Amino acid sequence: MSETSWTQRLFGGFAKTSERLAANLPGSSGGTAKLDDATLDEVEDALILSDLGPAAAARIRARLAEKRFGLEITTRELKEAVAEEIAAILRPVAKPLEITAFPRPQVILVIGVNGSGKTTTIAKLAHLFQEDDYGVLLAAGDTFRAAAIGQLATWAGRIGVDLVRGPEGGDPAAIVFDAVKQATDTGIDALIVDTAGRLQNKKELMEELAKIRRVLGRLNPEAPHDVVLVLDATNGQNALSQIDVFKEVAGVTGLIMTKLDGTARGGVLVAAAEQYGLPIHAIGVGERMEDLRPFDPDLVARVIAGVA
Image (cartoon, rainbow, N blue to C red; front, top):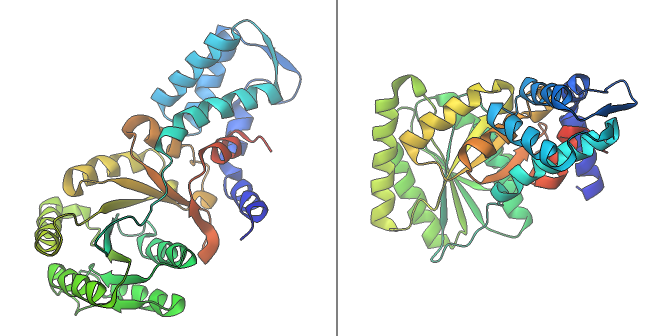
């Protein structure tokens, strides 16, 4: 996909978010507004209503006040100023997921609640690596649901990668062990492991992930190299509570946010960056294979603020 096409997809995907923000910003009907305390309050409220979160909204308000307090500002100028402050929050966390492990394979555990788009994200991530000529192997470590194994097998077939799988209810650690051995023996660059997403029993999930880590540690002390949490943007601020839980349970090292095309709550991306500072590796704005791309903070900031 060309950069122009991706930019168009992003603007389309974030349309609900940017429309919500624009509708609540002062001066949304055109003209100018004086950036006084009352106007800044409106800006802060608009940011919170767009799910950027109180902390990020307060930070942006303070920066606008520091730079432009008392000045007349057009709607366009206000959007551009907001975009710049959003970008300032997002830039430090923008970090592509790179294959750097030596010896290979780089082991990437992918975690997230059921329904977050985890399985399709794994396939899209594998496709991104394939575009960069990396060899990829998938492991069906979510043995709790037969549907998860079947769905991952379907995606593996579509993109042309091998899948290591076991029976429903099987031992995920044993599957991961087999997958690491296969990846090592065949010279695979990246092993992407699906994991269970059942948060209703944190203790069980924690024990399962701990066992996977122990097995990986015997094969490669550096593994897993990445623990990537997939978040569904339609959950808005509830996505932040998932970060809290999975940080405790799994030691999250980075985030991928999906379903940004189906929500007006895309601002939660900014809230997550402000609150946790975890790397954001990629974002998804659709069902197509090419709809997952590395995270570009400046572009995303302009899209959220509605600055074409």
